[in-house]
Image (cartoon, rainbow, N blue to C red):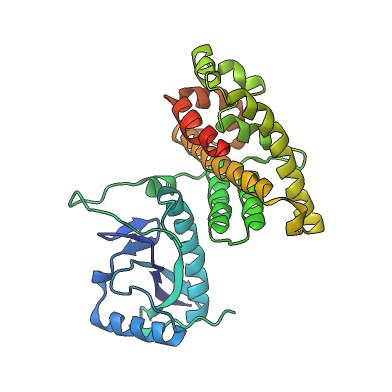
Length: 322
């Protein structure tokens, strides 16, 4: 077994890191940290893969792994990279957190560099500004310190939602977001996730609703569209669940649904996925370990959000109406 340093270049329209940042055993660093021989190897990799990106600007992602050869080292590293990028995509949802197939491997004992050649068959860029000379802890680094059932579910959920963001087919996007919430919340075959989607779209329900203050309930229901969507979400989420089952078991055809229906389903799932993932992150910050604990305290978590009605009225209900 040899030890390899595997380095890949991140795709255009991503986040540009001003300094090296460590996430477990993965490092993301700026392009200016390349040595001359590494720059030449990267040029060769881009030439082999016939890809053009902002190589002098885009950040690098790297890790050290043990493997029998370079190809296996790259495969192991890609799994590590994808986990970190899943987590970072939650922080920078409008940026493209993706790998290019280009990079290099460095066999650490010999120091030999080899360009990576890929043999396999629209977002917005963001710049980070370094404010301090020392490295601050961000939420991804914090998350990687956690090891619980809930954190594993959260990682899997982010993976599905990032897959959804890269998918051009609206029906597959909807299905992937449903998978993201199943990964986050579903405990058994017959478990229903729709009630929890309704919770964090602003509609408390079930036993946990008793923990929501009357003042917050009054503020929520003060919007004239609130009762309409309280009823409509019940029906829409059931149709999305049926859509998910039919898609998995029977396939789907575009003309089985109107365009307006698909757009509404996508809005519901986009809003519901981000809010449920945010609620689970809040739960983990408060030391909850399991999805059962999350469900037990769902009312308290919801009630703890200050001014949540502003998000529900100004973002969620507005988006559903328009």
